[in-house]
Length: 108
Image 1: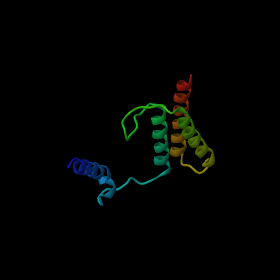
Image 2: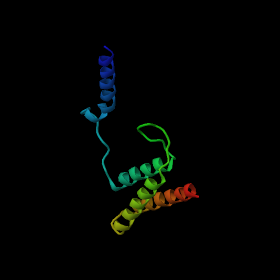
Image 3: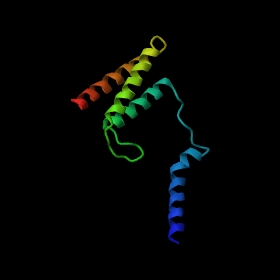
Image 4: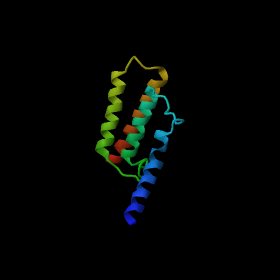
């Protein structure tokens, strides 16, 4: 009986987690360069310990991963130079500036 209850609880939890994914009315936001950069920014903030992990809501620093994510954003800035709108250029420049400052403060 306990095993059935545990299995039932697990199924219920999985259904709650996947509801947004399987709901036909659920629509993901459109992917743009800006939303992609903002997503990478959020990832870097989680690894800098500024934001909690969305899955656990706990804050944990992982500075090597934060640096790698910041470097990826920097690479994207270089590789897309001349192909971005003024707003996209400003966004990526500001995000990189802020993330680099936060990273330097963390490694000191």
